[in-house]
Structure formats: C-alpha cells, structure tokens
Length: 210
Image (tube, rainbow, N blue to C red):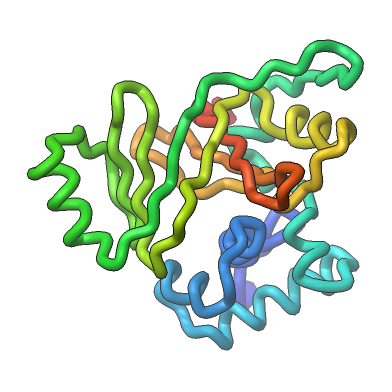
C-alpha cells in the first residue's frame, strides 16, 4: 500500500528548508529569498518557522549563525581539517569582489562587451566575471559606496570557527550558494572586521563521491 504525501527525507531539514536556510545565512530577506527561488513569501516564512522549530532556535539571527550542513553535500563529504588558533592562520588570495548594480542584465552586457571581461556564469540577479584570477560579482540592488572582499580558504568551517575564536564576529555560518553543472559547490561564510564591515570567506568544493 503506497503512502500518500511527501516521501521521507533522510536529513535534518527538507531540501526546500535547506534552500531557505542558506538564503537566511546569506543575509537575504524573505522577499529576496522568495524572488530568487520563484516561490511566494508566505512559503518562505513557513519554511523559516518550521526550521527554527526543528532546530530549537530562537530567531532568525540564531539560524544565520547555525553551522549545520546538508547530508551528502560536497562540503560535509570533504575531509575535515583542524585549525589551530595558536598557529599562524593564513587566508588565501582575494577570491572575489562584489559590486552592486541597478540592472544585472544590462550590467552583464556592459562588463562583457565594453570592458571585455570573461563572463563566468549568471544565476538570478548575480553575474560573475573573471578579472585575472579574481572574481567580480555583480549584484542587483541599491548601489553602495564600498566593495565587499572575499578570501578563498581551504577549509571553510574550520577557518570560520578559528577566526571567531581569535575575536572576529561571526555574521553567517558556512552555507551553500550555488551548485555548478559538474557537481562542484560554491560555499561562503561571513565575519565582520573591527569597523563592523563584512568580510567574505569562500570555497569551491568538488562534487561528493557519495
């Protein structure tokens, strides 16, 4: 006899809840998550509420700092490393600079055709270009005065934890932002500097063998 309803999920959260959680951890509002996912705001609110209840978390801020990983994701399947806070902590090269634009589609054409920058990929309102090995991210929204710097790191969870132990304020726990056609995944986390400005940590993780 076949059961009705949603099939069982062998994970702490459902796929939809993970997608919404990653949006929250990336600092997006409910309307922004809804627009990127092509769902209603009420659906996003429902998933946030369910997730907070499942995890026993008090509020959205607590969810943003929650460091859980989806079962079978590339990052959880990679070999975990230890980051000794007493040893020298080395960040990798700058991996990405973000710039806000008023219209992503128009900016993508301009940066590609006028500046001649190699276009890497676009999803939603985000467009990515290569600038001699440093990635430029164009994000649609109200233009800001400052750019956001991202550093590449080899072990994102360990580095995020170690930087907080050194006194940095955690803003967003490691979260998946994109999966490429080859199965590799883009992951990010955020801390704040001494002036309260965000700094991004990023890692591209090979596809899980599982």
